[in-house]
Image (tube, rainbow, N blue to C red):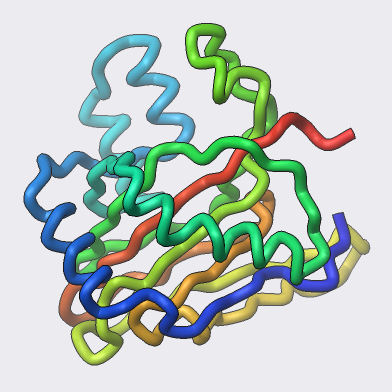
Length: 213
């Protein structure tokens, strides 16, 4: 899929008060280890992960998360998602947003190259809002002041399918100001580089719709 805009951003649109409230709320909840799609499926199938599974996971992703699904969070952020979808000329059909992921990256933690979308639509008949749908638009919100951490850069690999073409890696500096929002198609390859100082807090959301026709 060729895109005119690989991502759309809004600089420092979330207030310090809102960012502080999210961080305080997220820190008050029980943290869990962030998983990838592979480990999520294993946990669903076997109800547990082996030491080897955790070891492999830590080579791909290392962060702590909390799941949030409060209306006041969606009400604040979703208008920007719809604006980005229109202004970037994606015009994807989306009709549901998954639980928000409050993420904490300590020193040395990271998330290597990945896509948020998967090979097949969700197969969850008991969850009518998700069943048969795919992730179409992802959102990352910066909750931390850039003076409070180092490293942790968000990068996109806007790779093309042309043979022999080099990867086009873009560092998304637009996410650095506190309260900034980045919206991007969920199939886009991206990563979070290791944090080298301090703690990086972010909020991530995924917006769903039926498969492209």
